[in-house]
Structures are given as C-alpha cells and as structure tokens.
Image 1 (tube, rainbow, N blue to C red):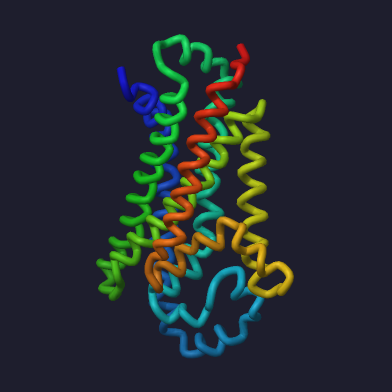
Image 2 (image 1 turned 60 degrees about the vertical axis):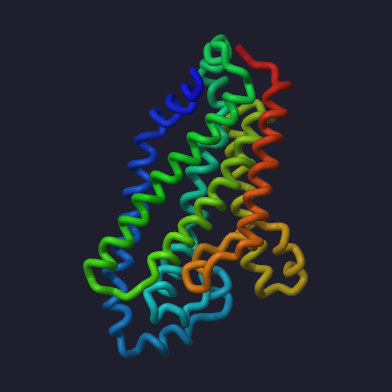
Amino acid sequence: MPGRVLLKSLRDLRWSIVGWGLGFGLMGTIMVYFFPYVEAMPQFDELLKAYPPAMQAFFGEFIRMRTIEGFLSVELFSYALLVLGIFGITEGSAAIVGEEEKGTMDLLLGNPIPRWRVVVEKFLAQALALVGIEVLIFLGIALPVAGMGISTSYLRLIQALFDLFVGVLTLGSFSLLASALLSTRRAAALVGAALTIVSFFVNSLGKMVEWLRPFRRFTLFYYHDAGQVLTQGLNGEHIGLLLGLTLVMLIASILAFAKREIRI
C-alpha cells in the first residue's frame, strides 16, 4: 500500500513532534512574556550599546531588540537552526543506516516496496513531522503575543518559521545522504553536526574576519537567517537555493541507496 513507510515513520516520530514542538514553543512563550520587562528597562539602550561587535556578529543586531520582532530575532531565532537542526540531523542520519543497525532494513525491503520510495517517504515523514513541530512553535509564540496585546506581524512570524523549516530540511537531506553512504548512524550524524557547526562559525566569524568573508557564501547560515526574515521578510533567492540543494541531496540519496549493499 502506497504511503505505509510514510505512516510508519510518522508514527515513530510522534513523540519527537510533541517534545520538540512543546519544548521550543515554551521557549518562545517565555521570551514573549519576558519582552515587556526588557522593553521597560530605562537603561536598556545603554546596555545594548555596550555589547561588543563580536557578540552582535553571532547573535544579531541588539539594537533591534526594542521591538518584539527584533527581540525574538536575537533571543530565539538567532540560534533556532542550531537547536532544531539536531532534529533534522538525528532523523536524517537514522533514515537508512539506522534501519540497518536495528536489523529492520532487510525486513522492510522484503515487502514489495522499491528502494526509491523508502527514501522519499522517510524524507516526507521528516518534513511533515517538522511541520507539526513548527505549528506548536507558532502557537507557543502567537498565543501569548495575542493575549498580551503586543503588536506584531503574524505573517512575518510564519515566514521566519518557513525559513527555519527550509534550513532544517536542508540539514536533514544532507544527513539523509550521509545515512545512505556511510556504515554507521553515528558517522552520518557526525557529518551533519560538523556541517552545521562549521557553517555557523564560518558565517559568523566571516562578518568580522576579512579573509573568511568570501567563504560565507559556501555556508548554510549565509542563506538562512530566520531572525532577519522576522524583521525584513523572506529572501526568495536564498529560499530557492536551499530548496534546490535539498532536492539535489534527496536525489543523490535515492541513487546512493539504490546501489547500497544492505547488511543483515
């Protein structure tokens, strides 16, 4: 039956959806309730000016924190991909080699299911799980904002979450390819984690270090900035590039898995 791998994968991910969604949504709720106290601090402007440029390079322009969009941009979305990226890396790296390590891949392929569909449906399951997580994150931010009467753009919030969705999905597709190529889940996860960490530091340090600046264009974080989207809107060119890269990684994963010799 078409979609059974998708349904089984979604069922396996149900607690991850709840845990990640409620956890990150609660962080957003805390930030929203904290914002009026920060905004009311008379010495807040002087405090913001005291932050060194190096910190602003990593976490964004602190001067924007006088608005709820700027505050959430710095305090939540500046590191959102680093945190939620763990979900993408974990699930992507487990998709193929994780099944092998559990001894279930041979049973799965014993059914009349082509290999390409296994890869596609596992990828779609991760994407749909991520949608569920982000719905909970949206509610965790939007409900207290509405309840407190804070003026904000819900469209910008949705755009920022979509930008985050694309970034996590790109990381997940890269880890999926690593899962189809490498022999252990740990190795596949390490590859995804290394890509994330190196990309973050090269992009952030490239704002300050002249010789690193040209390399920023080769990092994921140069094209992903949910915090900037929250204050300035989506960059269609960057979104298109990341979605294109995700598609390439998915196709490469299908081809790699088609040639993979399954361990029993």
